Image 1 (cartoon, one colour):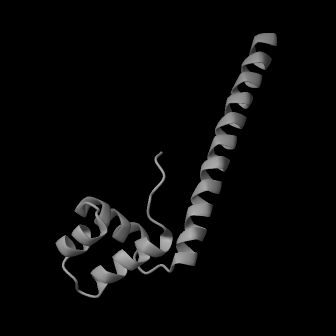
Image 2 (cartoon, rainbow, N blue to C red):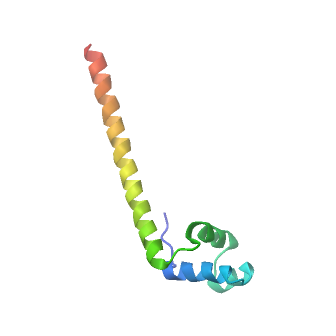
Image 3 (cartoon, rainbow, N blue to C red):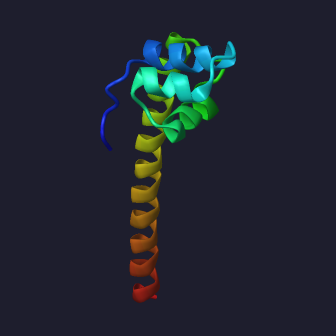
Length: 88
């Protein structure tokens, strides 16, 4: 996945401008982003401070890592159960 060229603080500022009532088209033009990007950020980061956004990203990374571990363990378990069934 491509890394964002915007920092958490910049994303928070863009979302905050929208909450303050600035038109979305103007915000997107100033920031150089599409409206779809703005609304994705708004859905994901609305009401969060930059430090909370960083923590959210860390938790998502950790969650992804743990999901991979679980998938590997489930595959190992299935292989072992297959071996046991063949021996019986």
